[in-house]
Amino acid sequence: MSVSPNGRLRKKLIYLDSFELAVDYTAYLKTIFNKRVYRDSYRMEIKYYASTNLKLIKRWKVSDSKTVRDLLSGQ
Image (cartoon, rainbow, N blue to C red; front, side):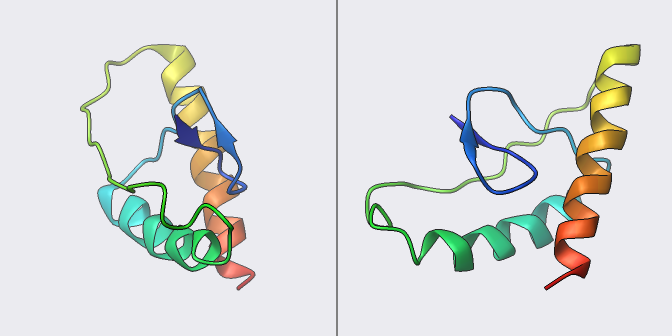
């Protein structure tokens, strides 16, 4: 299970362009998830994988990173 750039649960992984952005996004998600009824039923962790140079992953990384940055800047 993963979390979308908009903070929704989903099966697809999220691809971000930096580890620092992932840490900031995780901190943001913790505040969101603490308000949910299942707040005691999950564990949040960051998994860092070095991606290959696949064009599709690059496209997802650009798109997901932009969405997360926009979300974090609107706090």
